[in-house]
Length: 389
Image (cartoon, rainbow, N blue to C red; front, side, top):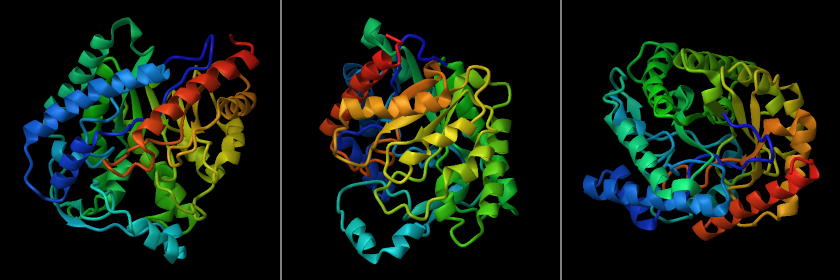
């Protein structure tokens, strides 16, 4: 895993805007409409190449394939794993329940998208990873796009895969006798993707919004202590799934959900960080740009960084069309670097993805690229101020 040795490096959290035509195909398939799988495949491959070039142009050092060949950051597993079928609707977030006006405003949006809450599948049979071919193909396509970019490619490429915890909470268990058994099965299934991504030479990012988000979803009526026990259980499952994988090849992203909402039911980072910090990873990707959690950068002072571990600090909000000024970005980077005590352990990133489920992104594509370019410029300013460049 690269460090910011000579300057602050830039990255992001994974999902990037998908072309409208590809989004529509994913949305139609998710709604149960028969679509041309070859058309999805072709559009996904073209979008991968496009998104790689756009990241490089924006100044991203540690980039990915934008998750273009997936319909959503975790829902795609229903096509790669056995055992999923039927459908159910998840509970609304606790903060949304407190504000009926907000819910009405949010539900009024009418555009093609893949819902990560309504009509999603359940576990109705034994969960196993089917074949590596899909993830191997995704890796190969990303590698081909990087080869086309040539010398102008990323300093380090990464790919994402979901936490077993977000799958376990979102895709309701109707097969296993216990939640623990379901979680363990999912851990073994996602391990296939973890191994494949690392074996293909990519940095693995585990997307684990469950480690914060589920406090105000699945655990909204239960004490925080029970939620922390859940976090500990998921982290232990992740560590088991990562057995044999060097931690410097893995970073972990935790967040409170990529949606524009009140977020005043979010659990405090301080309450969950001790459990999250037990993950056997080389870096943590944490949100510090959004107005609800911007102050929590101070918590990383309690994050035990050893063996070269890094903090990817969210300095860009993926839910607003404001293009952050480079000076604002630099200020945010500097604050985190001060708390960490070593700027080489800090990488600039985004709070979350820009299009975690196809069509659900809140920011127009052209603004996304402007925001990432501004982050790159802010990283240069911070590097000078921190006397790295």
